[in-house]
Amino acid sequence: MPITIVVADDHPLVLDGVERLFGLEPDLQVVARCRNGRQAVDETRRLRPDVLVLDVAMPAGNGLDVLRELREERLPTRVVLLTAALEDEQLLEAIQLGAQGVVLKDMAPNLLIEAVREVHAGGQWFEKGLGGRALRRLLQREQSQHEAGGALTKREIEIVRMVARGLRNRAIADQLFISEGTVKVHVHNIYEKLGVDGRAALIVYARSRGLV
Image (cartoon, rainbow, N blue to C red; front, side, top):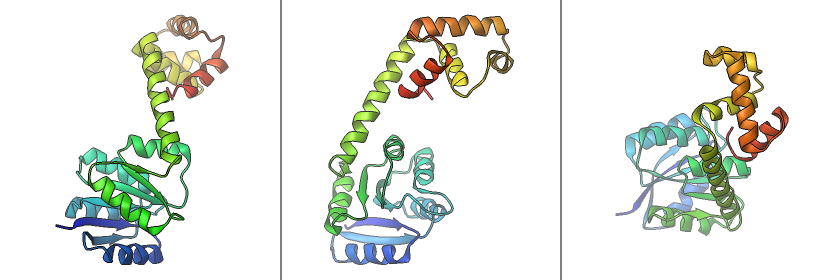
């Protein structure tokens, strides 16, 4: 049985090119073409293809939005992102949301075919350097979150995130239904545990550790 594929991209030329590319391979079959994120989710839900080849920048829901919906619905389709460019943060989020492969549009066409086959077989496909760098950062972030989570209580982590959003003690107290004095004690304890000496340093720490 061929590998069934849904292709989602808002550029007709890309859709035509990818469909022709896959059409030359006897083990690959395009079952639907989509021009936006909403169509991509609907067709993936309806057809349950083996692989979704997904552009990141699309109207009516970008690639990351599509990944979120697929993850929420726990659809079994595996995803290869096909994109012109991808920032590190976008790549990290895509990996966290379940993307199994990333292919840049300026790469050789045969690499997209290889990526689809590899991902369908249960593997991952990332451009050399691109995926490795992002995966290292993801692992470092998770490790930092684990370390910080071990040092701070759930309430303290909650307060760290509020501080990072720019909330002052009174606003934090109002949102958590506790006294401003209690917030001050929590903030002091957070400073002590993390070894920071003020709100600015705490915000930098929180962002560098992926807490916000």
